[in-house]
Image 1 (cartoon, helix red, strand yellow):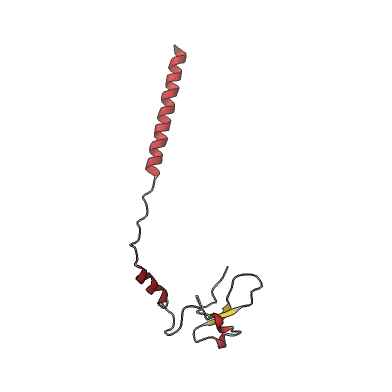
Image 2 (cartoon, helix red, strand yellow; image 1 turned 60 degrees about the horizontal axis):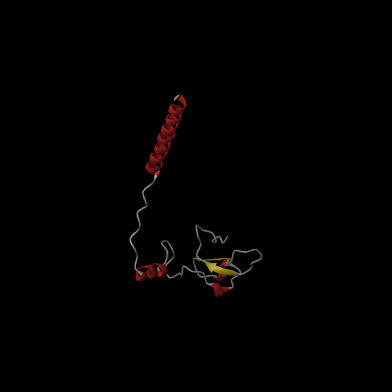
Length: 107
C-alpha cells in the first residue's frame, strides 16, 4: 500500500510540474509587433525617385556607372569617385553621392 501511495504522489508531483511549466510558457509569449499601414505602389515608387534628405539639389542619388572616373574632379559636384563593386580585384570606378563624407562600402 505504501508503494502505491508513493507512485500516486510522484504522478501528482510530475503533473503539477508540467502544469507550472505550461503556464510559464503561455505567460512568456510576446505580443506580435504592430504592422505598418500598407503603402500604395504609386507612393512607394515616388519614394524611390525622390532625392535623399541632405543631398544637394539637382544631383542624382544613384551612381553614374558610365562615368569611368579616375578622380573626384571628374564627378559631378557633390559626388566622389569610388569603387563601384564589392569583390576582390575590382577596378571599376563610378561617381557616388558620399555617405557620411566617404565612399559607400560594398561588402
